[in-house]
Length: 113
Image (cartoon, rainbow, N blue to C red; front, top):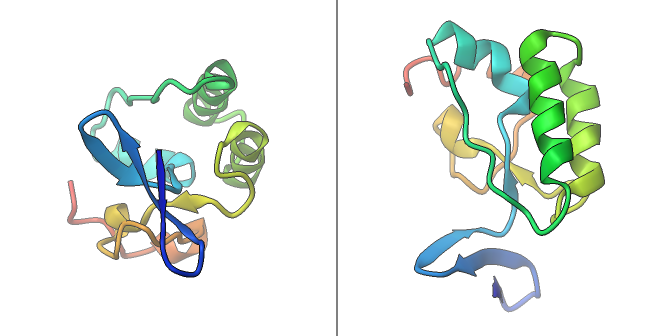
């Protein structure tokens, strides 16, 4: 179930007992940062469709055979939120609903893991 604000913007998704952002959370642009911090595994949330494509995108990012922009395009293809519906603010110490592109990552988020 999706909860919208008065203007009709999707804010939250209720998934059982969890209240999640309506935007799709992704760190596909930050794979190198995750690796530098010693992250050795990630969780990909299952979707009604497209989960295999999401796993493929992250696999290619981890292997280094896909860049951040191409990865975002691959995720947009299957994201329920579609184009522009991503968030990653929490990773960068900003409001979780916000989205920042990779160039904004320099010097930010380094102390959050």
